[in-house]
Image (cartoon, rainbow, N blue to C red):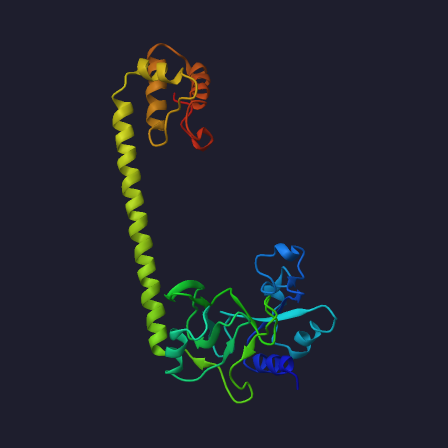
Length: 285
């Protein structure tokens, strides 16, 4: 049996969906972008690849029935009948120390990529997101919604992907406890950093709005009208509604009726930043 048949049979048995990817002709991707393809031989052959993904041996083999080169990939992150989610550790470096650390915690399915990097597959009880260098430098995680090109596919360098294990005698192992703990702690750290950044951004925006509000509130209506008459000057976000209210209140005090104030409001809007996003305040009765 050929390496291709061995791979298809193994992942079919492990209930890991497979998809066809564009192949390479003289190092050039078979997709319409050709030499300009940013990911030659590494992206799905079909746009609806998530629906095409299959564990059926006959169907997967049919993708290789033509003379046109096709690469094979597995879909990561999907739950199998045992409730497990597949994840792949992708180390973009020859003999990466992180992969060596993984070997100390048991043997699982591994392969060498066409670029010389290392891949290791594991089952997880919970979904794992795709991430870049979350665990270590030059180490990515392929999880929910991800794909991984597998042997015996061809790399743009001309080298083939190659399994560094015997598919006839190995199984995909459960994720090691240390790796699971590291993924959880790293994900939490990133989430906390995003929360702090968001909070900091909100704090800055709030301070800026307060400064603008104080600035514009201190201006007289005549000053504001004079400012708006200067071409290119706009009422900034954050104080638009307040300024509109002051202008229309002044117009009403001067005797402007309902329809006049509505006409004035439309004119004022043209001098407001992102005026199309200002709603419900253009007519003050």
